[in-house]
Image (cartoon, rainbow, N blue to C red; front, side, top):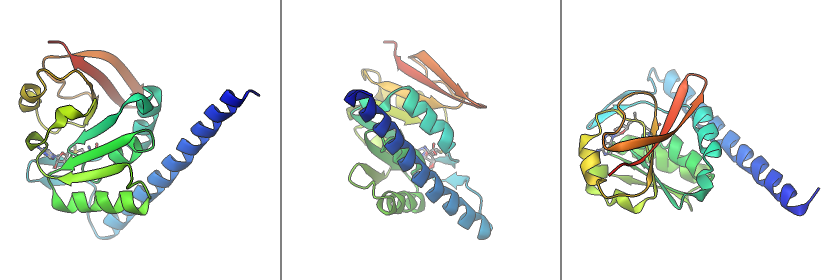
Length: 190
Ligand SMILES: C[S@@+](CC[C@H](N)C(=O)[O-])C[C@H]1O[C@@H](n2cnc3c(N)ncnc32)[C@H](O)[C@@H]1O
């Protein structure tokens, strides 16, 4: 087997191992929540928290070769699960309004030793220079209009998880499906 093929296999194996550790970590976290009588969804100050499904997200990110992205940004990062998975491939940042979710996310990236490439900001993503990322991820909990204004000249790719609330003024360029989940890649049509 050629050296380049070996390296590709090793990389694939390494990313699967890192994903397994992230999935295990969050499975345990959700079990703990359940034991305390809580669910992995609730309302926050600016929206609704629910989590993307880890295995599907990992499949989507591998398929689109997220490693080619320089800075991944999860808009409304919740408990940080998506930002941590993105951190397997590239530098990743999550912005979340809810202080408790932000602290759960920071602990996760620390415990999983991802904190050199996965970071979190607690705040409103509309107050930040989100156009510095070349790849944005959104599991939308509200219509896109305020974001669309902010991104009118932006040239990156936006990944929308789930079938609801497609972004206006953006054009779908690729749709991925995994089980019942989907992720669509959009680029600015302006
Ligand atoms: C549906 S959850 C998605 C969580 C995570 N991205 C995932 O896929 O697992 C949406 C999150 O966005 C947060 N959110 C909504 N609007 C926000 C804003 N303007 N700034 C920061 N966080 C926001 C909510 O608090 C919620 O946790």
